[in-house]
Length: 350
Image (spheres, rainbow, N blue to C red):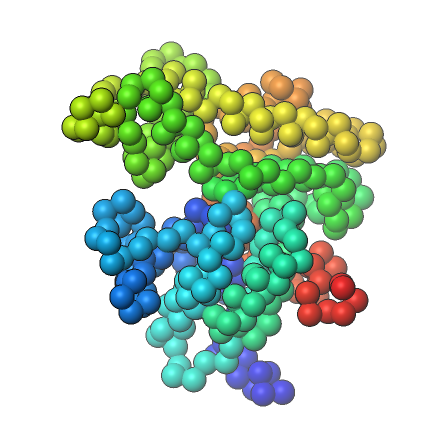
């Protein structure tokens, strides 16, 4: 009753708590926060120095008393306290210009498919500790499918491949549930690592994480274009210890990321192989949908289509598909309640 009285002041939200980025959707407002999942902490007093983009800029550039932390690894909370502080910061940022007294918001949050009960409880506790009144959990590929506009509640197969920063979630969905799936700790971050390793092995250059990511975004391509794409690679020469700069092309980056991309494709094929034939017939006709930052890799849709012999579509605004899905759940909780995961506090779940 108390919550009902003040519901107009509370800003219920959907959160995509990603390894690389955290996005926040507010009912009736849309996406209000899209920032890196990075926090800078002052080790002397344990206070937050910066969150999001401001903290990411500090990566690899801080003095000893400041630590820049990515509190999520492979889609899982690795630092509970920092994750709670980060979520609290975003919740407070949303309500900053609101009333002094604000009821605790209800939060819909997306989590990877293969999380354990302990990891699931960690997400619930972190969001509750950050100021939520209620936490509703949804599987990431389900949220991505809703955000992409797929008919998940129909008796037909829909396939979603969500290539994020820490995980790749592959799922075939029918009648509001996941029929066959794979969850890989292999996504954008592993591509960055592959570029760093390639630079070390091929050019004796030590690259930073942000530099590798920048190269990936600028010229990574899985198809050969008429004109090579080119950029500058800058890092530390491993032989002299001095700065070094060379020109590289998309062919170099393609060689660097071939192995992780092949693994993703193999797991997509494996998921299809484990799908009931009636649903495979639907997928063959309708194809699969790519979401997440990895969907922006040039030529990835063509490569997957060639390997699976299926149509492949990239959804509009793939980076925001998951958080838009959580927003649609907020807009229709009664209609989509069945697709939500049970709370770890629910005795029936145990």
